[in-house]
Length: 91
Ligand SMILES: [Zn+2]
Image 1: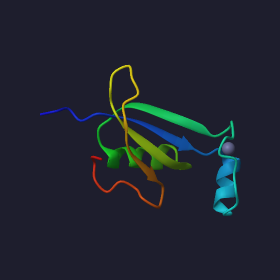
Image 2: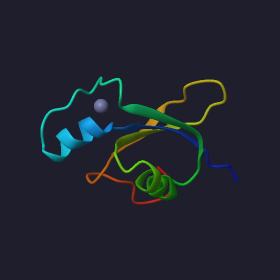
Image 3: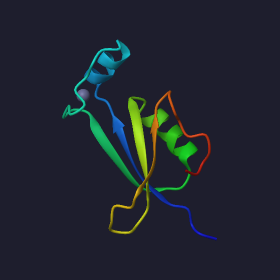
């Protein structure tokens, strides 16, 4: 059985951008205070989403890549908070 492993990157808004988003106002997508998280060992998209909700509630979207050691694997999926969140643990 193949071991399921993904690499994931998630965009997390800073307090200022989060406030603008909640007011449905435009925010700077290149803001330097917002951050990108990178995880190398994601094997369940549902628990990954839960982890973001618990630890980084300001996340806005995350991308999922095929894990390839030392390389950027192809992007498999992208999920947006509150819009198209993962519905199963795999892509
Ligand atoms: Zn920001």
